[in-house]
Picture 1 (cartoon, rainbow, N blue to C red):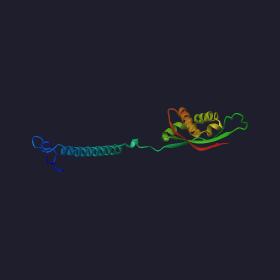
Picture 2 (picture 1 turned 120 degrees about the vertical axis):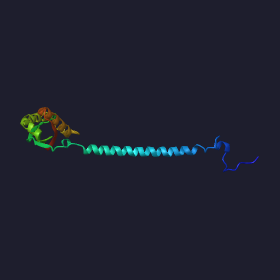
Picture 3 (picture 1 turned 60 degrees about the horizontal axis):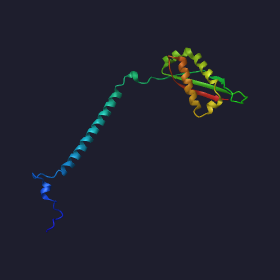
Picture 4 (picture 1 turned 180 degrees about the vertical axis):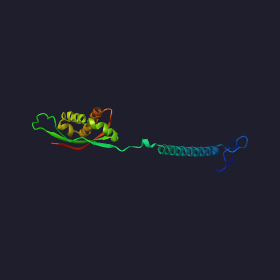
Length: 171
């Protein structure tokens, strides 16, 4: 028996098929390459469409949606005594000066007549605090959040956006 040469295809009748066509392995690779190229182009086109759409949406914003300048209202400086710690004999005081941040000067004009109510709300709350409430982690942050909540209750339906500390001293 004679050996087949190494570079000769195994079974020539099998490689050509019955009608003499080329094997299907080469066409599968072409289909995979073409499919990948189509997916890549579709992805790039979709990404470009999204970028153009988002740019158009930002360009169409009306002037009314643009952020208006904020207004700040000063609350008069307050000095208040704090609740004593257990076993403490010497009184402790806090000096507090804050500013209220509001959306615009119209809201500031609505809040101005209510400033005595705001000051009363601040004093009633702060007088119930102890020095340890300020020294704990996040104590000043919690104070700011609680003052903001209480001032918004006092000036409703107007709204204060933030309480800003200008001076905060514990003696």
